[in-house]
Length: 202
Ligand SMILES: Cc1cc2nc3c(=O)[nH]c(=O)nc-3n(C[C@H](O)[C@H](O)[C@H](O)COP(=O)(O)O)c2cc1C
Image (tube, rainbow, N blue to C red):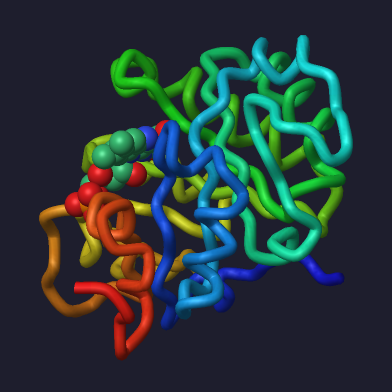
């Protein structure tokens, strides 16, 4: 299967990363069944996955179904490029993409943050794409130079004006036009069929 490209992040409606509910494969599969085009798992701290054991058919800190593999984005919580790469290597044969989940502390260390994204891009095979998620305009210019395919931000016009082939995903309070895709968290938790044009729950 080919690597996810920026186009795969366009015209989509995504299940956002959520601790607890997003850790369950059944919830992500339900979102896919009802029209979500990609689903994010919850942020898992790099060291947690390094100490985890991969088991088949047993409940664990992170469940992953083979059915969702082409649509599943794995979110790594990290502040260290080397640990991020190690963690990505542990999981890279299960979900299809990695997503660096950046704690708020990393927003004040943009060089470290970008070095994590670059390390992941360089260490991962081409079929594993990487993406980032940010809210801070001052970082966006550096981030879009790291080789990511998709950026979740509120500063749509800034990314578009850069001319880079990066999909922009809208999430949260920013609901204006111009984004490539939207990402839903809380509404999906209370109504997992909200991705459908005809939701089965209200
Ligand atoms: C219960 C819960 C857990 C969340 N866990 C994560 C997470 O693991 N990683 C992350 O990047 N964002 C996480 N978020 C933030 C959501 O992905 C999303 O950005 C935020 O809720 C705004 O989207 P919404 O308005 O559709 O809820 C979480 C949000 C909620 C409500």
